[in-house]
Image (tube, rainbow, N blue to C red; front, top):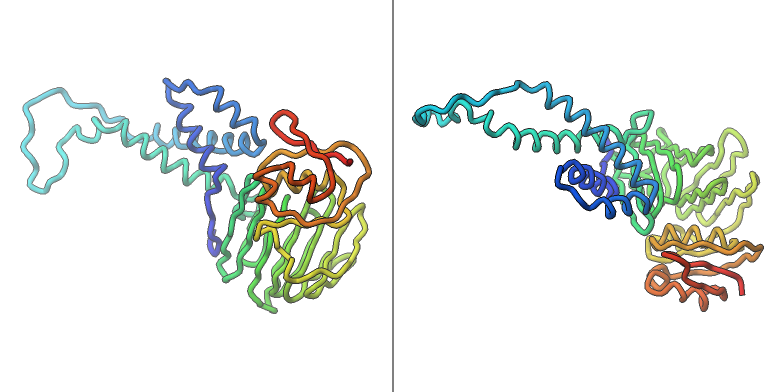
Length: 318
């Protein structure tokens, strides 16, 4: 897409690798493949998209001329112009087919990852981050477990997760972000957006953002934050230096329930956290690396209990 730098995410690269290896008649690691598919719903979506691309690649290859090797004959003298002898292409058709198919898969999966309106979709796995450069000099930093559709130099759609936007000033062409069903308009600023189900959290570090311009029209200047929960917005001050702190390996909570904390920790660390039911709400700041190294560090950080369960961890009130 013109004006947008598209980066293959690790999930897409893994999907292409699995699609290529599972086509091998001698492939035997079905347990490993199944474990990869079940590890994240995004894996299955990525694999299906690559398989569709492979089918298209097969159709293209099938349309290539079916060259048949010539009967064995006396070796032909080398052509004066160094062109390969007749039958050369036919004898190498299998190799060419694999190379062409691989190239087509890369091209076609790029097309398959387009949003309905033509924008490139970027998706990160939990614990992974991605920087997306826009053609006008703006950039988006995508947090773990997030999905963003870039629909041009001045428009994007956050479908889930969290992202920090650093937007170049252009009063004539405001940047428009759709976060779920809510629209945000910005002429040039730095702001962070987190979308988790019906909860929307917008914090501004520089400049100003208008939230829901066609409805509430909430203007957020630098050092302001708006949180929507239960369909209602709450506006509060925020430390501009702390906006987007997840990029520096830290996440903070304010009056958050254990389920919300568990979901955010899962996105940030790549580990699996769940929470016991309850109405406990906590505030605090957590260093992601410390929790990734030892999930029980949460006990001292938040005053909760943490226990292993299966391949993940359960957070409970004390």
